[in-house]
Image 1 (cartoon, rainbow, N blue to C red):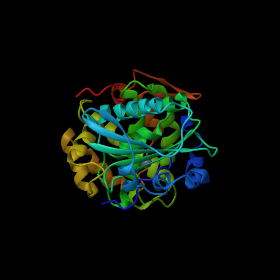
Image 2 (cartoon, helix red, strand yellow; image 1 turned 90 degrees about the horizontal axis):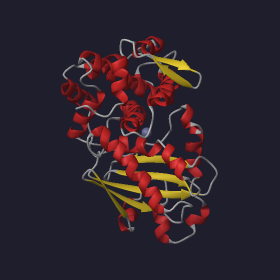
Image 3 (spheres, protein in one colour; image 1 turned 90 degrees about the vertical axis):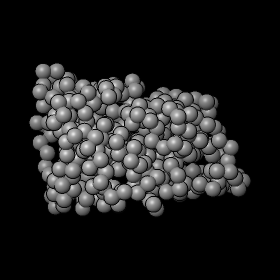
Image 4 (cartoon, protein in one colour; image 1 turned 180 degrees about the vertical axis):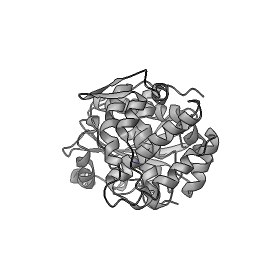
Length: 339
Ligand SMILES: [Zn+2]
């Protein structure tokens, strides 16, 4: 089983400002005042997921499509009512559930801690799978409803639950899937428009390209290659799966099939998972692309890809060209699942 959590290190994008603050804030995110207030609250605090303390704490139950989330709040209060925070949890879970066809774990512990230290309002998230699916989320006590409506971190962490834990050298696919799927899941459930997603991809995907000395995704564990290199693998796989299946099926079908095999609570080698995904679509794109991108730099002409998809940069946003050869593929990625 996984011994280390999938740690949160947010991707770069315009709507993802202050990304570098999060990791620094994580270290000191919980104030000393909280640490002084009682054993029960202390036990929920700390660098890892406090499974034992969590299981002793009173929780709120959220049901999403037959799955249960148990939500425990740490010590202290938020300016928002807890009910509003739970609404945000429910919406995030619905987005992820809609993408994968079900929420990716039957029973998920969600620990929500508050912080008074300065920094972004949704401070950090971490997903854990080694003693049952769990997510730890740190929110500023001053977090607003608007902050929660714009947040992507909780959906990113919930998306982590959908992939079995793979050996460490493939960490890029764990972060790549979470980075790539998060905005699509939110778009498919109607809480995010397509234009900002493509604008973010145009900014972010170049960060995932191989640099000098690159030795492929399995052997180049830099931040850019892990998050955006992994996301680029997902985008290329999705587009190619759809091209080769007459736009009938894509990465979403593959990921649903992989989830049916196991979630983050299980361990797997990577190659069998890719074969499961390929079989669900009927073309071996994931396996072929992994053979290229896992061990080799694999440069990608992104400008040509955006042209084929019909996405043109336009200041801070993008314009779409519906006459582009892959315009229908582009639309399918953000449309509700078509079966
Ligand atoms: Zn992540």
